[in-house]
View 1 (cartoon, helix red, strand yellow):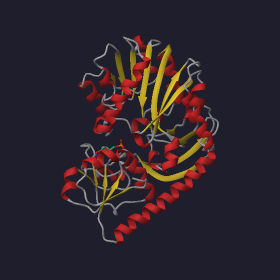
View 2 (spheres, rainbow, N blue to C red):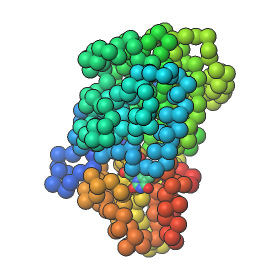
View 3 (cartoon, protein in one colour):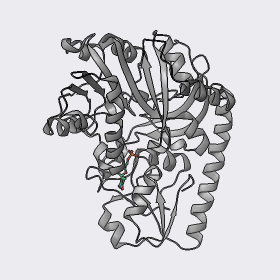
View 4 (tube, rainbow, N blue to C red):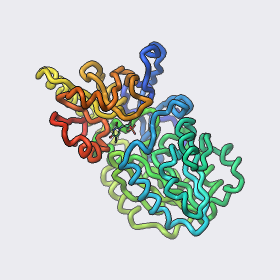
Length: 393
Ligand code: TMP
């Protein structure tokens, strides 16, 4: 794949093997036609960008079957409420606000009662429908120049564009940034947050890598990318979401840069996050993590213990397919109606509802939603078995 920013080919430094669509929970009759791609990752040293070498078409992931609803996590609802308070400093009384990838409207809902004009772009039909039902103005299209041109009143007049866990999904970063540029006012602000490369390397949480996550950003990469478009990174704020994310604040003005930016960039340079060396360490850490996980699972099995998974996350697809874990895990329980009764992508572990979990006390539980640990441990206080994961719990 060519990196659109530099047009330079990447040399992959690692392959995770054949991967299905991470959110492609599947019915038994569809197993024979399941789609797989070779999940390789590369590092573009010119812009310090960690990225997938190839990825399925966005239309095959973000469609009427997209099974992710932001509102399924209480923790994320609270996070978005806080996020909506944070962005107020970039607004005046009657601001125009756009959210890219607005999902079911969980974030924008917090701004409905203010005087602002809000608008979400959400390509997945089923989640966009829910937002519209909740009276959140939503355009059911991908965010790009064509769809943005249709909303003339926002062109050059938008005060704030926000996104969460979305920019890393967009294959054509060039067009995305040009669209942001086209919509924003001169003193407008672009705020987005994404899983952070530094957290992924530190935790060896390689399950952050899957088809939807084309890029894994750092402050170093974001600054280099946006400078190519005459934008400046003016603030960075670490977030606890998704196992470690970073909020990036981008503006055209270059005179209001927070001291956070230098601190984080200096940290990244000291950890070589701006260079391929850190990726090579990460590769061997992933291999060690896989060996340790398989040893643990094999030990549970030798001890005659039953194992289930908790939360059929998109991240779990990477773990299960990279480590080739299938019948060792009896089932994965999840709250999402769209996933229940189907099978996990690639490894075909059955997805069951929460009653199944409560009625079949399994001895060992793989917490796939490790990033929601506090919320889940709180809910499942009565569970007496062993929790485990590939990251420290
Ligand atoms: P994601 O990591 O791909 O965003 O998916 C999160 C999944 O975890 C989603 O299917 C809902 C599920 N989940 C539960 O089943 N129980 C929970 O308590 C939480 C927080 C999430």
